[in-house]
Length: 148
Image 1 (cartoon, rainbow, N blue to C red):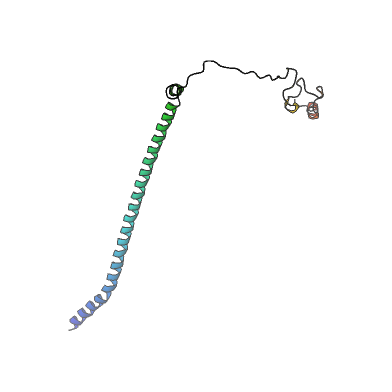
Image 2: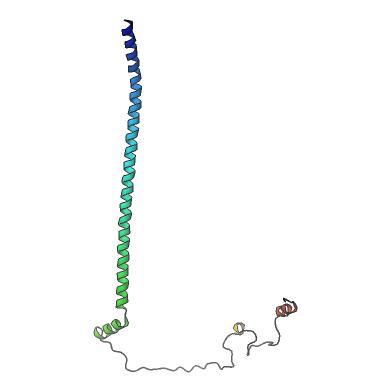
């Protein structure tokens, strides 16, 4: 009987410990499952973002191609030969046969007259009013100092 009671005690102890282990194992399994799902969600989001980036880059390339084509078309349509041809064929315009020049009598200042205001004329140039022989005081001061 002692052996039987010892076996019963041992099985009762295992039965009382088992629910705790099952709870820990269940929690660990749930945590692993949640982490696995999190990884799948992140990978899915990264893949979706990558496809969106590739689609936008493709749209950018298509827009750049269209811009280049439109620039080439503008260059073609704005050539002088094409404009002249369109003007003569479609609009019925002709190049001018005679040119007229209109002269306006405006007296230019003589060579001895100043064309610039005196504040813009360099010092020492002929025609500047004032003392042509005098130099500014700071030049006289610099002349007294020897820099040799």
